[in-house]
Image: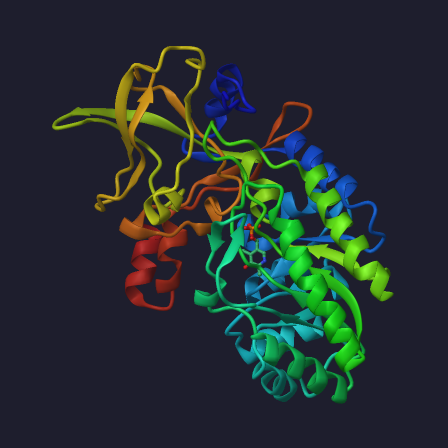
Amino acid sequence: MKKETFVTKEQLDEIVKTYPTPFHLYDEKGIRKNMQALKDAFSWNPGFKEYFAVKATPNPFLINILREYGCGCDCSSMTELMLSDAVGARGEDIMFSSNDTPAEEFVYADRLGAIINLDDFTHIEYLEQAIGHIPETISCRYNPGGLFKISNDIMDNPGDAKYGMTTEQLFEAFRVLKSKGAKEFGIHAFLASNTVTNEYYPMLAKILFEVAVKLQKETGVHIKFINLSGGIGIPYTPDQEPNDIRAIGDGVRRVYEEVLVPAGMGDTAIYTELGRFMMGPYGCLVTKAIHQKHTYKEYIGVDACAVNLMRPAMYGAYHHITVAGKEDAVCDHTYDIVGSLCENNDKFAIDRMLPKIETGDLLIIHDTGAHGFSMGYNYNGKLKSAELLLKEDGSVQMIRRAETPADYFATFDCFEIGKKLLKME
Ligand SMILES: *Cc1c(COP(=O)(O)O)cnc(C)c1O
């Protein structure tokens, strides 16, 4: 299958007149269409709610688009909570699914009225000490251990993951929380990441629904929601078949009717905390070819680097690349597409078949809308790029400016040397 871009060469040629490369560009139309499709797929469940995983794309302008559809925020740090607060997501519009949580973050989450999702049994006491009470609505993160398989394929290894409580701890946690006054309960689990199969959510739902029925029977608590968390993936490679969100919603509905409804739990709300699925395909990194190097391999040096997109360096992740304006050209050249970091893993693609690239060509690196910009860092003192929104009417809005040296040096501002550095621009 051919991977399409949501922006044309003509549009990019216009955009780069105002905004220098590299930049992340987001597709408002795609974000809206996908959000609506998710809502439709789960419309059978009256309490359904998506809590966008803020860490995937922590940009208030993008989160605000999702907010129009009733989307909440899934947070796991102080600054993510602050962002949510700033866009007006408070109370039950925030799911605080953190782990190894500092006390002050629990305090802030509680002040905002967020739903707190406890990662560990010991956090019950820790939370109680931090905030002075146990909230009426509380959630616990479950880790069933072992391997998570879908028809013999190992999807992931929960037994090796730091997250969540064991089955015994989960039951004990519900008893203890109930005795301390909790009234409404939630269960959460995240067992596999970036799944490109319609079966992940239904299988996860079955595990959680069965545990929920037992929990309700054995502890007598009311289970208000089951949080299927993130993990629905996107097709990064051209050969992958995209997930069908309608089929996924239907699959979860079938398990719901099979397990929860007969147990008298047909009032349970389904929550999700999707990040990658919500934004991944609707962002790209636009970068310019600035060098061609012919040594033992053929290199194209671009003006972006792993600071702008870490996934290839960190996970060896594949990101499709389109040379703008050469969409239909033959891919008869083998290139390594590299950034400028003094770090040999700073490569967006290795041995990639692409059309012949000229210096000055614009390269579109696909699927950077989630866990792209947000994973960025500042190695080599490289600065983070701007983020731009391609609006539905075709206009472009800057939704984050590019970093400047002053941003990079800002944390020296309390020293003499900092005053000098900050004056140097
Ligand atoms: C990262 C994360 C998500 C989002 O995961 P995606 O793979 O982007 O869907 C959701 N919930 C929690 C707790 C997470 O850590």
